[in-house]
Image (cartoon, rainbow, N blue to C red):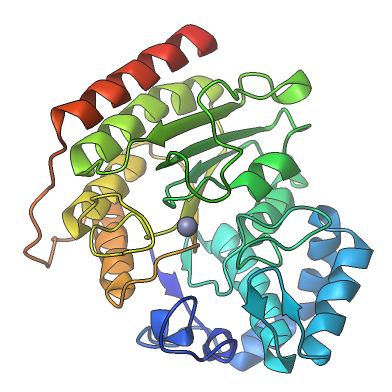
Length: 317
Ligand SMILES: [Zn+2]
């Protein structure tokens, strides 16, 4: 799995903390400005299949006028970063690659920006594949629930949305275990909320559970919303994943042997690049190059996870 990065994404919010450019600045630029420019007609078209024209205009205007939107301050270059991220996400879908997208996207809904998300990169790339007649399974491993992505595909029977996230954190009111979709998406949504303190053993156990359901759904593609704020050193959440856990996650998702691409979501510790590298190494069958040990969880966390997976088995049948 190759990593796609373009420096335009570093221009939005250059701050040294939060959703700042420090997150991505150490990635090697593998996509040129020229390639991004060539993608722009497609990007402009594709955004309209996921977001309303009004939302797109609003984002453009907000960047031009340097407005605060949702939880971020936007500037003119923020819009370039948004469009570049969409371009990278679509390229990743075409090339089975990992797109270093920034700002992230999975909280953005059709008509509105949310959190630090403005355009939903994974949703746009998924919709691009859907229009080619493909069925797509989205696996969201960010530590927050991807409420925007789930909401965008709620009427689409060709998408299975799966999320593993910490319970009772932002966006607070979504991602509950009994939310398994309705109407056309009935049983096409699988949410696995985790207790604070859950580590690699629970993360991988939950992914193994999902992989059984993914096989049943038989998608043409796996789209990974790859957030790394579940990393133990990331203080935004209280999950305990290690780089070893991300390596194992990549390995497990690769074992499904399906065309797969990933886009970056959250991850606010300075080692986010190493987390990405570990995931990609696991997926690609390369050696694990860090010393992190696979983390284990408390008995309370394990019991909670067993209860959640048992509940889901009952709900999904
Ligand atoms: Zn997150």
